Length: 466
Image 1 (cartoon, rainbow, N blue to C red):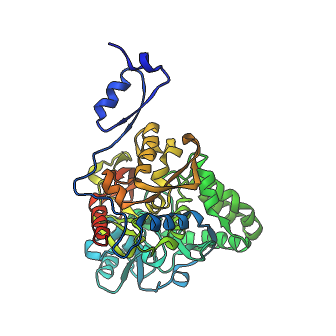
Image 2: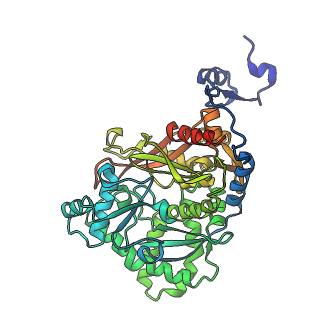
Image 3: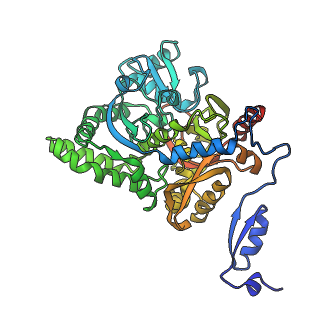
């Protein structure tokens, strides 16, 4: 039998679209093969081009991605949540994902809410916290409704210190808490004395040290630039943040040294950041939020500007319909588990961290971060294939974030619900995995697809306007 390489040469690369078996047969002939998942366009999915009011959807989408590309999110300061987040008050708790009430909250979100109530001094133990949480005496609201984002459960309570971001191009602000690290931490629903002690130290030592340093930097810290640099150093700024954390520490360390008189406190702050590779996540997320909000409200746009999960529901919002959530049940994550845990322990997908994919990095830029597969599973080739696939459902590419292995091609930007439905390709996300029961915390990390229903419902809503 004549081999493909005998005809076209050994340097040939074959791109296989569709059936996996076809890719396997080519690979068996020692030919480099790139496989892309693909299915034919779905029946009944028409190309939506112009709304009844005369808005050209492509032109609207171009406005959206242009605004995102022009964004300049800068870390300008810090503050206490109740004092700086618009609409925040002493009986409010913010959470990740679409709106949800206590009765429907998943285990890790409940655990994080109860832990926050204990941290705030509103309850003395988990039993008292659970009673208060269910009493109706606490107002719950999505972080996204208050210009805020939160990883995993995403809980923000009134006393928590938050980073303050300003989009210097458009003048809007975004907020996020400090990152606690991995394992048994509040954002994964972890509860216990060590969790509350860490949060208190972050409030009394970490926050003031960072805050004073930032006050001494009149121009703040350009986080967009750090994300771009980190991407050239092996990060994708969602589940791999080692380079970003190092770059941030390098940027702020001199200012901390000049403004912190307590040498031991300074040393502990530096050690905490240095040992927490995920510290930068809570900077990359609000950078994405600050970049996306000015792109909301463009009439006729089919671009996703919010994609978030609360562990029960997965939800998206469109630029053209910024106040409407399209939701579906949160999906199950396929991944790697810590010793002693299995898929049976896992809670469904959770967190606002998909703001990174929405803004043009994170899981959509996995090709820049092949080592992430050691954390979430898969292979370096899978990371590259994932990014290549996401170009099929995005409207544009981000020139500010480039991927070396793809010849410095800009990252996929602007999830277009029309393309999602036309191609049948759903956004691919990498994420942490929380235990389904309150109080346990993180049990692993993995990868999954966004659910189709919310994209189909969003597509149908746009179709009604056309």
